[in-house]
Length: 486
Image (cartoon, rainbow, N blue to C red; front, side):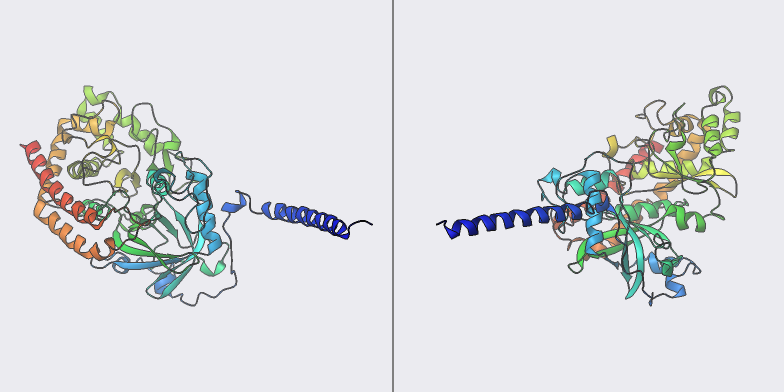
């Protein structure tokens, strides 16, 4: 007689195999919907909602930008993001595809933050922006609905991610999803369509972005407004403190609209090859258009190349200056150059081929220089070292907007006058050290309570040391400028 236990065992084995095969097929079917490609596709949820907090003043395009509300110099305000767990994972999956494993360069966690992905993707720089997802933004008890939220940055974003620091910079676009959610058509935040929320990467004082922008502004230059904010993010586990940030006004939104008579001119965000203005390097890709994108016209940029490199620069300087001043707001550039060189801000033109805008001002049809991204300012040594006030260390031919203008005796005299105006005005030692005192006292409670994994500080001592370094830097730069002028 056959052993009934054998029959039962055979039956159970066959049944288990059948279930295993079916489960594997089911999992395969599910995995077809969660491949890396779909894993970075935003999840659009809750399309049937009523924006009950909507008012004309706070949410409508009809309201003028409320600078006093959004860009305070006397308080640190708070923003809250609420992002669904599904969309948070979309953001993390996308970052892994772009920059590899979270924390890879610091021996950090093998998986991503908040239950995110593990290894995968490359670690090189990319021209691709991180993915937008819809989320809620809360401020002063009001909600802004289905706001486009994404991480932002390039080298700073990559470095933060690889170091395992989740205090990442964000881009906010308040009507990014208006086609998917008609309820939010032309949604604004007190009159503003979008912002950059900077994480103060590489700046343990957390003041550089704001203070440098104010120095430029006080020197009479067009520049973004800024303000300090704390950020809390709820991606499924309740609000988490992401740290102290700097909110920055977008140039292609309200800067050109409110600081110029019209926002109809060509706005360019130069980047990489060509943006140095070196001879023969012009290419359209190096001058991304942020306005009038549908018009394939770079005539103004080409005209600047032509005027800058004309042989009259050495044979007939007066004619060269006249032709250059017909396409470039030279006075504004020299003012910017003097301020930028005094304060030492070289993650930009002169060392790097990025971090500035050019706007063709409709009032005079001149390309006007607008500084951008100042978190590495107010220090020596970054980006290959700061340039001397007399540009004796400038590589010949690489940065002709600096080299050629400084070599011209008329323009050098104007530059020198702006150097003096800078140390006598917006960067006067006693004044700027007072600014450092005011702002460091303002942000100290928020900077020194950042938490591990969401901070670039190793200790609170880093913050206090960074403030002291800023003050010493102001003194040394005043001395350097005086020595240069003498």
